[in-house]
Length: 447
Image (cartoon, rainbow, N blue to C red; front, top):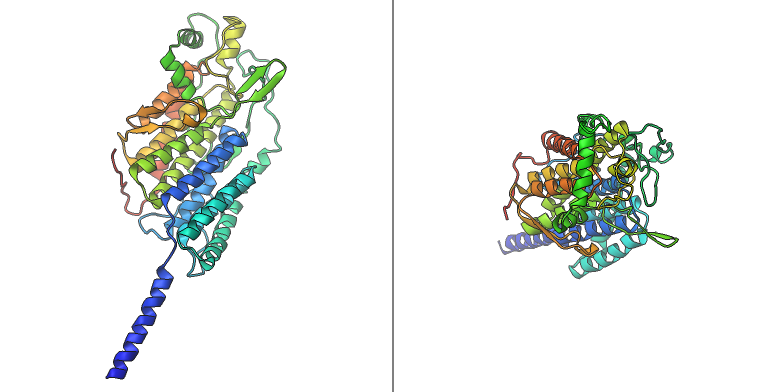
């Protein structure tokens, strides 16, 4: 009897110790993901990525993170078979794999591949690895997780390489037109139009880039009774009478990485966050305010990044179809040669308003995750010298972002209104088409 008890206790002790060893994984926290996503934003600013390209930098790493984390959380569904072209990621084949660690490492590898300043990403990794070691991570856990993350990264990269991005790098520049209502380069840099072939990038949830074509811009006319003339004069008069509050709103949502400064014969750029970077920053703020865990934070980033990516594709499709002249160009030519907008005009056609599209789509995504009437203080622009702004909901923030383009003098009202429509359609489609939650419920915490 004593012998039986001894062997039973020995077996139980061995089983328990093995279970403890197998189940012990170094904790990876939501703050680690927030730190990584912030570093990606900082690098996109440093490397001066265009708004559409920056959206691509966010979406693939975010999906990589989400797909790994969803493997250990049955309340979330994989996006494989839902997002265009995405196949299931590999399964881990080593019990020492820490899926949370692997999720962030896959994000890191994918982000590093999509940016230029790799050393800045490597600095983040070095600091993070030290932090994990302080939490008790051993070499076997690190190596196993990194190896699995590398396989996931390779899977995501193979998928990304089929989105036509590389092909668009060698396509022709946007040709200038001799038609009076078509876009022309704007001061002070008179840059060529950026990303004229962005509508060829593979969409994520959209069936195609032209799935949601807005109403066309008003017919170009300088007849004082025409809708186009009236909206042109609205931009002219709004800027002339813009007050301090509207200037602050315009500056807060400027998000133009191409602002050029001229001093004598010297021209230099002021580095700013992109519109997508601003909304990924709001996703971070909301996740921290909600005290969301790693999985829910990843869900927020991923849904927002898909909304941004598809929003830019849809918007850019319309921009180069309508190819509409900017207010600054036509006002200087026909109304007032000395007039200048509140904000510097970005280098691409006017219609529709990109910020109106992507802000509405992103706000819809975040509302899905954290609910309506979610109050927050947006401090995203503080590091760029601008004060925080408080909003009672994501939609309220998106509406202000859209109207900021009129206060800034860079968009007509119709581009804003139709941009909101376009962004709403993108947001609605993502909500209806992509099933993130296994139980189809949205856990939200109102603040």
